[in-house]
Image (cartoon, rainbow, N blue to C red; front, side, top):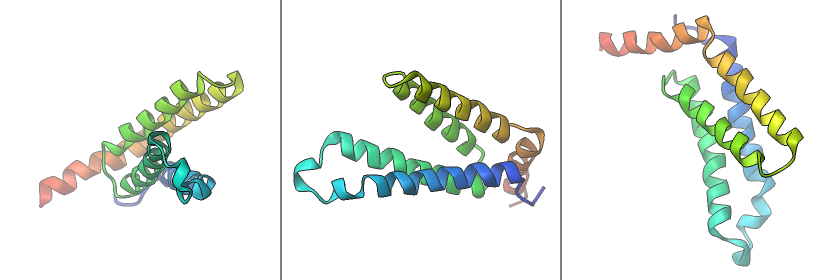
Length: 120
């Protein structure tokens, strides 16, 4: 399978967009010398990780599926300290993304990455 399945493309772009939106949301904080803290660096790291995850999904890197799920699971745990609706939303996103990335055609797409490596 050479063509990217639509569920993988959609999920990858959601991660890329989420990363860029998150970086933009905190952009003014990055330029304030007094606000640069460990927490802000962590937030930036998490946003960049989302972008990397999306790009790796598009590049057919098999473990990127697990990175995406781990990224969302982290947000589920983080949202436990916030509102119930935020927790439910993140949990629903985790379930949807897990389903999309492990659908039969998505799994076949990532399995094909092993076959490509074996040919080289």
